Length: 264
Image 1 (tube, rainbow, N blue to C red):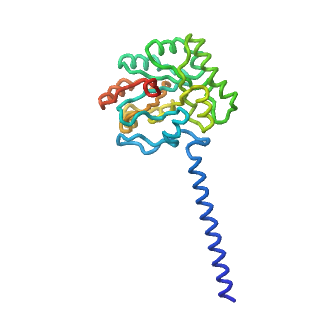
Image 2: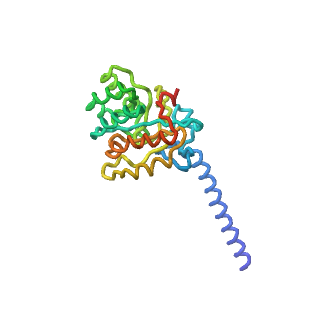
Image 3: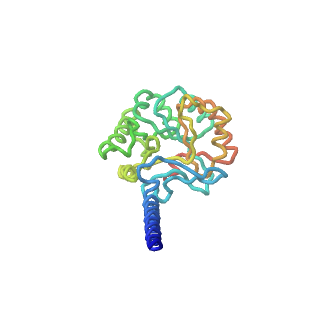
């Protein structure tokens, strides 16, 4: 009787273990299908040694929606981009540096920036930079209706045309890099290319600005072919170090290119 009960207990334990294993395998499979595309924030891994980083959605998946985070791995190009949710007093210096260095850049702007700084926006365009769409009010595009998605994008585009007399270049950077498959599909349906990034550092926090040397330590070792570099024009440090940073990147053999050359 004792042996029989022991056998039953062992059978039950093996049954429980089998159920757990099956559940773990199924969860892993489902997670693998949805990872990097369902309600996520843009993220990167495997930095350094000149290699392109791995994103939490691969290039092939993103390409279905005209989305990019990096350029050609065989071309030593850099695509410089700035996000600007507001003006913090450093953009004029940044534009001066870009002009001096003959480096093109793309500025992703929100409605507040356009409304309060029309002359800076016009200068960006006059000096050959791209001004692109960061949505009107910086909402998380994963959680808005289709109507609100279109409104966020179109309101910014309309304001840009009212301010400059020109149509906006159809590049969209999702606020805070948040996205899902539906938001990528929505952007594509509106004729937009979604632009993420392959290199960035924590420069947006005005209370924790990095030192001169920290910027170089965080950026230079992670440079790679086809790099889309994200900086924030609100950063005091970026305004101060940009000239030397651009010069050093050029010394490493990289060429700065316009987003128009990436996404043509």
